[in-house]
Image (tube, rainbow, N blue to C red; front, side, top):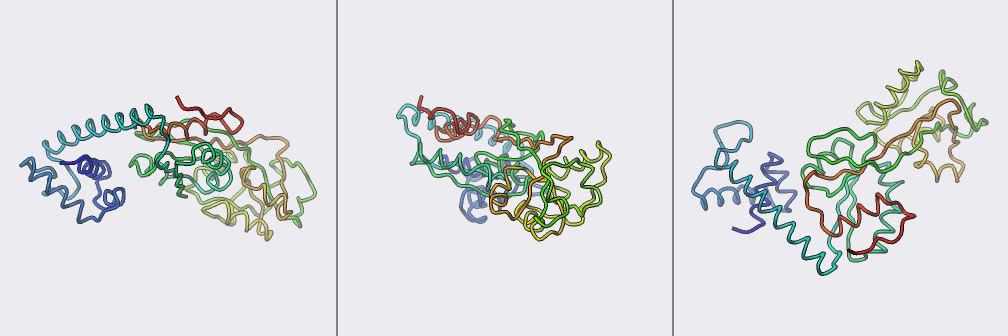
Length: 301
C-alpha cells in the first residue's frame, strides 16, 4: 500500500466520482476502479456499497477514509516541513480563477512571484465562478479567485481587493462626451449584462432594485471580454470592473463613465480549502497575493 493509493481513494470519496478522481491523479477511470478493488482485497472488506445507486461507503470504508485523511495530512505536513527546513521553494501552484481576474488582476502578481521563485510553476485555469469553488474543494486547485465571494462548505475565504465598477460605452454613444454620469442616465439605454448565474450580475441586479433603477439587459454574456466587444460596436452600455478596461481606454475603443452619485465596488477574494496543508510555494504565493505588489520581497523563513 503506497501513499498514492490513499490519495486516489480520498479523492474518490470526496468527489464521489471515478472520473474526477481519475482526472485529479492523471490516471484512467479503470485504474481508479482497480485501486479500489486492490484496497478491498488488501483489507479483506467491502469499501463501497455497490447495492446503492449513489456512491456510498460502507462502515469499513468510512473508517478507512478517515484514516486515509489523517495519514495524508500528516504526510503533507512532513513534506512541507522538510522543504521549509531545506529552504526549498519549488513545485507547482495551481490557481483556478474567473476570466476577469485571471486576465486583468492576476498577471502582475504571477510575474512578481515567478521572478522571486523561478523554480515554481504557476498553472492558471479560467473557470466559471461555481467551478472555481469546486476546484478548491476537490483540491484540483490550490487557490481560487472569485468576485463577490459566497460562503461555501470547506472553503476559506480571504478578502483580496476591491475593484470599482464604472459604466462604459462606445466612443460614438450619446453619453461618450461625459466623464461622469448619474446612474439614472443609463435608463433608456440598451444595457449589456453578464449571464444571470454570474455573481457580478446578481450583485448588480440587487443594486438596481435597491436604487429603483430599471436596467434590463438586452444582451447577456458569460465573460468580460465578449461583453466589452459588444460595447465597442455600440450594442449598448455596461457596468464593468474598472481594472478590466485599461487597454481599451488607452486605445480609445471604449469610453469610461464614472458614476457621480454612487460608488459600486466588486469585492475579490482568494480561496483555499480549509485544513489543507500549504507547501512552501503555496505559502509564499498567498503571502504575495495578500501583501500586494508594493510589499517587500517575500523572504524565506
